[in-house]
Image (cartoon, rainbow, N blue to C red; front, side, top):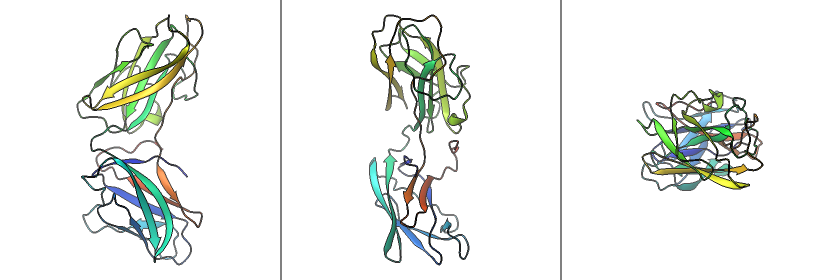
Length: 250
């Protein structure tokens, strides 16, 4: 069962349920995070899959003034709980980082195998934001392993073009690590959304300085969807409804 969906306050969303027993007719989804309960019904008579009941021209949404946090979600059918989950809610217009990678510059595109870096390595830095701030075309990366601040940009030739970045704004750039970095674990930091969002990753540096890089990724990350396990063995899922923002590649 995949976990990890984060929605913003005010986001439109939809739920689905699969694997319900034969003869089911209605499931009600309720949460303190929702504006109102949401009703699910079978796609067609006898179906184990659901359709969300929306009035014409309406959308169900996360409450717009909700504080960031994790909220319980409960699905019931005729008074019986059939699924539960936790829904993570972020502040409106916050970042959603799909990937934050620092890797040898010659690394295989899309590879996500963890690895260590050696001092003096030429590295590529890639960050994907699924909710990038409008007009923010560059970000600054700082870390003790770098010789100085690194600017990563959209439309960069260092963008590896990985499908794992689909649906997000990709920032990329390259730099050479300091060749005098002692062995250890170091923090890499990016500040985005006009200074309101700080994202950190960690990378291990070990070994003697190198003159050429080895093809392996150093830091990986990802964002996946969240669902609810049904007692019947099916899956109950929630998705962010993105009418104006692209859905990340799955």
